[in-house]
Amino acid sequence: MVLEPSPCSDPLSVPGLEPVLNSLGISDSRAWRTRWADVGGSSLALEAWGHPVTDAFVWSVGFPLLTALEGAADHPQRQLFGLSGLPGCGKSTLTRWIAAAAKVIDLPIAVISLDDFYYPGEELDRVMAGNPWRVPRALPGSHDLSLLQRAMESWRTSGLLRAPCFEKSLRHGKGDRSGWSEQRGQVCLLEGWFVGVRPSSQLGDDPLLTTAERDYQPLVQKHLGRYVPLWESLDGLWHLRASNVEATRHWKRQQEETMHRRTGVQLPAPALNSFVRMIETAMPQASYQHLEHANVVVHLNDTREVLELTRA
Image (cartoon, rainbow, N blue to C red):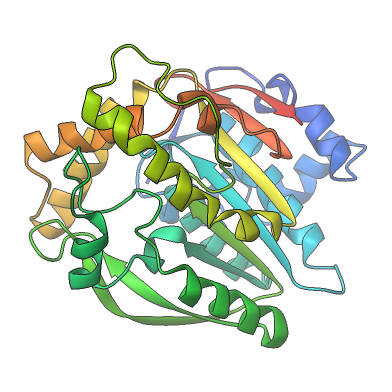
Protein backbone atom coordinates (compact mmCIF):
# COMPACT_ATOMS: atom_id res chain seq x y z
CA MET A 1 0.00 0.00 0.00
CA VAL A 2 1.29 3.47 -0.89
CA LEU A 3 0.38 7.07 -0.18
CA GLU A 4 -0.54 9.17 -3.19
CA PRO A 5 0.78 12.72 -3.46
CA SER A 6 -1.54 15.19 -1.77
CA PRO A 7 -3.33 17.73 -3.96
CA CYS A 8 -2.06 20.41 -1.55
CA SER A 9 1.47 20.81 -0.20
CA ASP A 10 0.30 20.90 3.41
CA PRO A 11 -2.55 18.55 4.33
CA LEU A 12 -3.38 20.81 7.29
CA SER A 13 -4.20 23.63 4.86
CA VAL A 14 -7.44 21.98 3.72
CA PRO A 15 -10.11 24.70 4.12
CA GLY A 16 -12.20 24.28 7.24
CA LEU A 17 -9.89 21.82 9.00
CA GLU A 18 -8.77 24.24 11.71
CA PRO A 19 -12.34 25.09 12.85
CA VAL A 20 -13.20 21.39 12.97
CA LEU A 21 -10.13 20.68 15.09
CA ASN A 22 -11.03 23.60 17.35
CA SER A 23 -14.50 22.12 17.82
CA LEU A 24 -12.80 18.92 18.99
CA GLY A 25 -10.82 20.81 21.61
CA ILE A 26 -7.62 21.05 19.54
CA SER A 27 -6.15 24.56 19.76
CA ASP A 28 -2.71 23.76 18.32
CA SER A 29 -2.97 21.87 15.02
CA ARG A 30 0.80 21.47 14.72
CA ALA A 31 1.04 19.79 18.12
CA TRP A 32 -1.96 17.68 17.14
CA ARG A 33 -0.20 16.58 13.96
CA THR A 34 3.01 15.80 15.85
CA ARG A 35 1.06 13.70 18.33
CA TRP A 36 -0.44 11.54 15.53
CA ALA A 37 2.87 11.45 13.65
CA ASP A 38 4.46 9.92 16.73
CA VAL A 39 2.13 6.89 16.45
CA GLY A 40 2.73 6.39 12.73
CA GLY A 41 1.14 9.33 10.98
CA SER A 42 0.03 8.55 7.43
CA SER A 43 1.54 5.07 7.75
CA LEU A 44 -0.67 4.14 10.72
CA ALA A 45 -2.69 1.04 9.71
CA LEU A 46 -1.85 1.89 6.10
CA GLU A 47 -2.81 -1.54 4.75
CA ALA A 48 -6.37 -1.09 6.03
CA TRP A 49 -7.12 1.44 3.30
CA GLY A 50 -6.98 -1.27 0.66
CA HIS A 51 -6.03 1.19 -2.09
CA PRO A 52 -3.74 4.20 -2.52
CA VAL A 53 -4.85 7.09 -0.33
CA THR A 54 -3.71 10.71 -0.26
CA ASP A 55 -1.95 12.32 2.66
CA ALA A 56 -4.63 15.00 2.61
CA PHE A 57 -7.44 12.49 3.11
CA VAL A 58 -5.65 10.80 6.00
CA TRP A 59 -4.89 14.07 7.78
CA SER A 60 -8.05 16.06 7.00
CA VAL A 61 -10.59 13.23 7.38
CA GLY A 62 -9.07 10.11 8.97
CA PHE A 63 -7.26 11.64 11.92
CA PRO A 64 -9.92 14.28 12.70
CA LEU A 65 -12.61 11.58 12.85
CA LEU A 66 -10.33 9.36 14.93
CA THR A 67 -9.73 12.33 17.23
CA ALA A 68 -13.48 12.86 17.63
CA LEU A 69 -14.00 9.19 18.48
CA GLU A 70 -11.07 9.23 20.89
CA GLY A 71 -12.62 12.15 22.72
CA ALA A 72 -15.99 10.39 22.82
CA ALA A 73 -14.33 7.35 24.41
CA ASP A 74 -13.68 9.47 27.52
CA HIS A 75 -17.39 10.17 27.96
CA PRO A 76 -18.98 8.43 30.97
CA GLN A 77 -21.71 6.96 28.73
CA ARG A 78 -21.09 4.94 25.58
CA GLN A 79 -21.28 7.09 22.46
CA LEU A 80 -22.77 6.25 19.05
CA PHE A 81 -21.43 8.09 16.00
CA GLY A 82 -22.80 7.96 12.46
CA LEU A 83 -20.92 8.21 9.17
CA SER A 84 -22.89 8.77 5.97
CA GLY A 85 -22.17 9.32 2.29
CA LEU A 86 -23.08 8.10 -1.16
CA PRO A 87 -22.14 4.52 -2.11
CA GLY A 88 -18.53 4.37 -3.20
CA CYS A 89 -17.48 7.64 -1.55
CA GLY A 90 -15.05 5.85 0.77
CA LYS A 91 -16.97 5.64 4.03
CA SER A 92 -16.61 1.85 4.39
CA THR A 93 -12.88 2.10 3.70
CA LEU A 94 -12.57 4.95 6.18
CA THR A 95 -14.45 2.89 8.77
CA ARG A 96 -12.14 -0.07 8.17
CA TRP A 97 -9.13 2.18 8.72
CA ILE A 98 -10.66 3.62 11.90
CA ALA A 99 -11.08 0.08 13.25
CA ALA A 100 -7.50 -0.90 12.37
CA ALA A 101 -5.96 2.33 13.68
CA ALA A 102 -7.96 2.11 16.91
CA LYS A 103 -6.68 -1.41 17.46
CA VAL A 104 -3.07 -0.33 16.97
CA ILE A 105 -3.31 2.50 19.49
CA ASP A 106 -5.67 0.63 21.84
CA LEU A 107 -8.77 2.80 21.52
CA PRO A 108 -12.08 1.13 22.55
CA ILE A 109 -13.92 1.70 19.26
CA ALA A 110 -16.38 -0.71 17.63
CA VAL A 111 -17.41 -0.24 14.00
CA ILE A 112 -20.51 -1.52 12.27
CA SER A 113 -22.27 -1.07 8.94
CA LEU A 114 -25.98 -0.50 8.48
CA ASP A 115 -25.61 -3.07 5.68
CA ASP A 116 -24.84 -5.79 8.21
CA PHE A 117 -28.43 -5.53 9.41
CA TYR A 118 -30.03 -6.35 6.09
CA TYR A 119 -32.72 -8.99 6.47
CA PRO A 120 -31.70 -12.59 5.68
CA GLY A 121 -31.93 -13.51 1.99
CA GLU A 122 -35.51 -14.72 1.65
CA GLU A 123 -36.94 -11.97 3.86
CA LEU A 124 -34.84 -9.41 2.00
CA ASP A 125 -36.31 -10.60 -1.30
CA ARG A 126 -39.80 -10.24 0.13
CA VAL A 127 -39.40 -6.69 1.42
CA MET A 128 -37.63 -5.55 -1.76
CA ALA A 129 -40.19 -7.07 -4.11
CA GLY A 130 -41.99 -4.54 -6.28
CA ASN A 131 -39.51 -1.68 -6.14
CA PRO A 132 -39.29 -0.04 -9.58
CA TRP A 133 -35.50 -0.27 -9.71
CA ARG A 134 -35.53 -4.02 -8.97
CA VAL A 135 -32.62 -3.58 -6.56
CA PRO A 136 -32.05 -6.46 -4.11
CA ARG A 137 -31.18 -4.23 -1.12
CA ALA A 138 -30.00 -0.75 -0.01
CA LEU A 139 -33.41 0.95 0.16
CA PRO A 140 -34.88 2.13 3.45
CA GLY A 141 -36.95 -0.80 4.66
CA SER A 142 -34.34 -3.44 3.80
CA HIS A 143 -32.86 -3.51 7.31
CA ASP A 144 -33.98 -5.41 10.40
CA LEU A 145 -34.39 -2.37 12.63
CA SER A 146 -35.69 -4.40 15.56
CA LEU A 147 -32.49 -6.44 15.58
CA LEU A 148 -30.39 -3.31 15.16
CA GLN A 149 -32.18 -1.57 18.02
CA ARG A 150 -31.68 -4.57 20.32
CA ALA A 151 -28.00 -4.72 19.36
CA MET A 152 -27.55 -1.03 20.16
CA GLU A 153 -29.41 -1.27 23.47
CA SER A 154 -27.32 -4.28 24.51
CA TRP A 155 -24.12 -2.49 23.54
CA ARG A 156 -25.11 0.67 25.43
CA THR A 157 -25.62 -1.47 28.54
CA SER A 158 -22.77 -3.98 28.32
CA GLY A 159 -20.22 -2.59 25.86
CA LEU A 160 -20.55 -5.76 23.76
CA LEU A 161 -21.77 -5.25 20.20
CA ARG A 162 -23.05 -8.44 18.57
CA ALA A 163 -24.19 -8.12 14.98
CA PRO A 164 -24.80 -10.22 11.88
CA CYS A 165 -22.35 -10.06 8.98
CA PHE A 166 -23.73 -9.48 5.49
CA GLU A 167 -21.81 -10.77 2.47
CA LYS A 168 -22.85 -8.99 -0.74
CA SER A 169 -21.29 -11.58 -3.04
CA LEU A 170 -23.64 -14.38 -1.92
CA ARG A 171 -26.70 -15.44 -3.94
CA HIS A 172 -25.09 -14.23 -7.19
CA GLY A 173 -24.56 -10.73 -5.87
CA LYS A 174 -27.94 -10.31 -4.15
CA GLY A 175 -26.27 -10.91 -0.78
CA ASP A 176 -27.12 -12.78 2.40
CA ARG A 177 -26.07 -13.02 6.02
CA SER A 178 -22.86 -14.88 6.75
CA GLY A 179 -22.16 -15.44 10.44
CA TRP A 180 -21.98 -13.00 13.33
CA SER A 181 -19.41 -10.63 14.79
CA GLU A 182 -18.70 -9.52 18.35
CA GLN A 183 -16.86 -6.35 19.32
CA ARG A 184 -16.36 -4.36 22.48
CA GLY A 185 -16.11 -0.61 22.54
CA GLN A 186 -16.87 2.53 24.49
CA VAL A 187 -17.66 4.19 21.16
CA CYS A 188 -19.47 2.72 18.16
CA LEU A 189 -19.18 4.07 14.61
CA LEU A 190 -22.19 3.20 12.42
CA GLU A 191 -21.77 3.76 8.68
CA GLY A 192 -24.32 3.67 5.89
CA TRP A 193 -25.26 5.64 2.81
CA PHE A 194 -28.40 7.19 4.29
CA VAL A 195 -27.41 7.28 7.97
CA GLY A 196 -28.89 10.47 9.40
CA VAL A 197 -31.23 11.13 6.46
CA ARG A 198 -34.69 12.32 7.51
CA PRO A 199 -38.00 12.03 5.62
CA SER A 200 -38.68 14.84 3.17
CA SER A 201 -41.90 16.43 1.96
CA GLN A 202 -40.34 17.49 -1.35
CA LEU A 203 -41.39 14.44 -3.38
CA GLY A 204 -41.94 14.02 -7.09
CA ASP A 205 -40.39 17.38 -8.03
CA ASP A 206 -37.87 15.91 -10.48
CA PRO A 207 -39.36 15.88 -14.00
CA LEU A 208 -37.01 13.02 -14.94
CA LEU A 209 -38.72 10.63 -12.52
CA THR A 210 -40.74 7.86 -14.09
CA THR A 211 -44.32 7.38 -12.97
CA ALA A 212 -43.32 4.20 -11.11
CA GLU A 213 -40.48 6.00 -9.31
CA ARG A 214 -42.71 8.90 -8.36
CA ASP A 215 -45.38 6.54 -7.04
CA TYR A 216 -42.82 4.58 -4.97
CA GLN A 217 -41.16 7.56 -3.28
CA PRO A 218 -43.84 7.91 -0.55
CA LEU A 219 -43.27 4.29 0.50
CA VAL A 220 -39.52 4.94 0.74
CA GLN A 221 -40.27 7.94 2.95
CA LYS A 222 -42.58 5.86 5.14
CA HIS A 223 -39.83 3.29 5.66
CA LEU A 224 -37.25 6.03 6.23
CA GLY A 225 -39.34 7.42 9.08
CA ARG A 226 -38.75 4.21 11.02
CA TYR A 227 -35.01 4.98 11.14
CA VAL A 228 -35.44 8.39 12.76
CA PRO A 229 -35.34 7.10 16.38
CA LEU A 230 -31.95 5.57 15.59
CA TRP A 231 -30.71 8.82 14.02
CA GLU A 232 -31.91 10.73 17.09
CA SER A 233 -29.83 8.45 19.31
CA LEU A 234 -26.61 9.42 17.51
CA ASP A 235 -24.14 11.36 19.63
CA GLY A 236 -22.31 12.60 16.54
CA LEU A 237 -22.71 12.50 12.75
CA TRP A 238 -20.09 12.99 10.04
CA HIS A 239 -21.09 13.23 6.39
CA LEU A 240 -18.93 12.62 3.30
CA ARG A 241 -20.63 14.84 0.73
CA ALA A 242 -20.01 14.32 -2.98
CA SER A 243 -19.92 17.42 -5.15
CA ASN A 244 -22.60 15.79 -7.30
CA VAL A 245 -24.77 12.70 -7.02
CA GLU A 246 -23.63 11.44 -10.43
CA ALA A 247 -20.22 10.65 -8.92
CA THR A 248 -21.69 7.53 -7.34
CA ARG A 249 -22.07 5.96 -10.79
CA HIS A 250 -18.29 5.88 -11.26
CA TRP A 251 -17.62 5.05 -7.61
CA LYS A 252 -20.08 2.17 -7.55
CA ARG A 253 -18.53 0.70 -10.69
CA GLN A 254 -15.12 0.81 -9.00
CA GLN A 255 -16.64 -0.85 -5.92
CA GLU A 256 -18.09 -3.69 -7.99
CA GLU A 257 -14.78 -4.23 -9.78
CA THR A 258 -13.07 -4.52 -6.39
CA MET A 259 -15.64 -7.08 -5.22
CA HIS A 260 -15.15 -9.03 -8.44
CA ARG A 261 -11.40 -9.20 -7.85
CA ARG A 262 -12.01 -10.32 -4.25
CA THR A 263 -14.84 -12.81 -4.76
CA GLY A 264 -15.25 -13.43 -8.49
CA VAL A 265 -18.80 -12.06 -8.27
CA GLN A 266 -20.20 -8.70 -9.30
CA LEU A 267 -23.53 -7.17 -10.28
CA PRO A 268 -24.31 -7.43 -14.01
CA ALA A 269 -24.19 -4.07 -15.79
CA PRO A 270 -28.00 -3.68 -16.00
CA ALA A 271 -28.33 -4.37 -12.26
CA LEU A 272 -25.55 -1.89 -11.50
CA ASN A 273 -27.25 0.79 -13.59
CA SER A 274 -30.54 0.12 -11.79
CA PHE A 275 -28.80 0.44 -8.42
CA VAL A 276 -27.32 3.81 -9.33
CA ARG A 277 -30.68 4.96 -10.69
CA MET A 278 -32.22 4.03 -7.34
CA ILE A 279 -29.65 6.13 -5.48
CA GLU A 280 -30.42 9.08 -7.77
CA THR A 281 -34.21 8.88 -7.58
CA ALA A 282 -35.50 6.93 -4.55
CA MET A 283 -35.31 10.00 -2.31
CA PRO A 284 -35.06 13.73 -3.02
CA GLN A 285 -31.35 14.34 -3.50
CA ALA A 286 -31.31 17.32 -1.16
CA SER A 287 -32.38 15.07 1.72
CA TYR A 288 -29.15 13.07 1.62
CA GLN A 289 -26.81 15.72 0.21
CA HIS A 290 -27.60 18.33 2.86
CA LEU A 291 -27.80 16.77 6.31
CA GLU A 292 -28.88 19.49 8.73
CA HIS A 293 -27.95 17.40 11.76
CA ALA A 294 -24.38 16.55 10.64
CA ASN A 295 -21.68 17.82 13.00
CA VAL A 296 -19.01 17.76 10.28
CA VAL A 297 -19.39 17.68 6.49
CA VAL A 298 -16.44 16.58 4.36
CA HIS A 299 -16.82 17.95 0.84
CA LEU A 300 -15.36 15.67 -1.86
CA ASN A 301 -14.87 16.10 -5.58
CA ASP A 302 -15.48 13.35 -8.14
CA THR A 303 -12.08 11.76 -7.44
CA ARG A 304 -12.66 11.81 -3.66
CA GLU A 305 -10.19 14.64 -3.04
CA VAL A 306 -11.09 16.71 0.00
CA LEU A 307 -12.22 20.19 -1.01
CA GLU A 308 -13.12 21.52 2.43
CA LEU A 309 -14.65 20.69 5.79
CA THR A 310 -17.66 22.50 7.20
CA ARG A 311 -19.51 22.34 10.49
CA ALA A 312 -23.25 22.44 11.05
